Image (cartoon, rainbow, N blue to C red; front, side):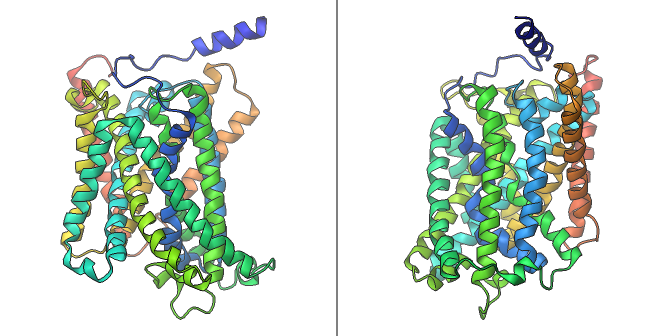
Amino acid sequence: MDSLAEIELSRKAVPEPEPRDYRLRQHILSPLETLAQSVSTIAPSTTPTMTIPLVFVLAGNGTWLAYALALGALTLVALCIAAFARDSASPGSLYVYTRMTLPPACAAVAAWALFFSYVTTASSVIGGFIAYSFVVLGRFGHHVSPVLVAFIGAALAIGIAYRDIKISTELMLWIEGISVCLIAIVVVPLLWRHGLHIDRGQLHLVNVSPIGLRLGVMLAVFSFVGFESATTLGEEAQEPLTTIPRAVIRSAVFSGLFFIVCAYGEVLGFHGSPVALGDNPAPMRYLAAGSHIGFIARVIDVGVLVSMFAATLACVIAGARVLMLMAHHGLCHKSLGKTHAEHDTPGLAGLLTGGLAVIPAAVLAARGAGGGDIYGWMGSLAVFGFLTVYGMVAVALPIHLRRVGRLDAGGVLLSVAATLAALCAALGTLFPVPPSPYRYLPYVYAVYIVCGMIWYAYSTRQKPEPV
């Protein structure tokens, strides 16, 4: 009885960070639908087709190792996030975790960084949507405006997110599940055909440079970002203190294992190919033909196209809920904190999130940038925001554990390891200085954060009490 009383007191020690008046639909999402939010933001089916080839350009035979190292780092962060999610359920996601433990200014940085990350990730996958629209359309794609394609994808995502969160998560679950299964149908026969022997070139990291591997790890991190987005469903998930921590950890671990297998298989499958993996616009099509199941390739292309749309939808859903809570706390205009009277969704916040996401993609496409370039540029920009929040949550973990009476040596070690992982990942995006336009992305992010903090200073001056 004493131990139960202590547990109850420790839970009561966690401050309630915000009022429960969001008017979101309460506890309607099953554990599988909650998992679908994180999985869809990761969009695992897009990594084998777009991100792994980019990592291969940097890491070569070390592509699988780049993903293994990224998995290790993100698993540490996932454990930190899960520790918070077991005590707090809120649509504010990681922003609320920092607000519970760190000074208000730090929480404001986390809020702006997290919203920035969801918007730029959505913009990135809109670029991927453009790229695979032309892959699917083939020669007919030359007659379609990429700007129009961007606005169509964004409009559909905003419309579905506006209507019903349950419909949205069910749709994302089916899209990602089918796409991943189709990719597995291509990769597994490929590995089987090469037998049980190990590819020595990959095992011994032949021609892999330390700098290339480090840059590859940084790009591999982008494949994982968004694994924490299930935490934005704190009001809508069933038994959120149980289902959300599980969704966060499982989405990161399972996706990471899938990426490692796909990276190994793709590099192996492209041995002897006249076109290198990094130069092939549709690698699954080549691998499917090599496995004598070429008819699946076009289905996979369609699956990846739809998966890009699902990722856009997931980012709009997550970003809208973070923005809604920011409005409740005075970090942006209060009108963004309102929900739709019938659908119980943050309609205006979702509209703004989707609009901000499509603008950079459409502008870049209008200026002649390809969908793959938009995917890479905006995705790299999103990583800065995610690493900021991941690092802050890791730093805040011991404070939270001490407050609830669960701080021990394991919690401290986890915090230190996750913080170092986030810090090393951030430094890896800066040094050595990457080529243009990637070298300018940190300045874009810094200017955005400065603008957000200027608004925070103005809003706190208007209200004597911290918002």
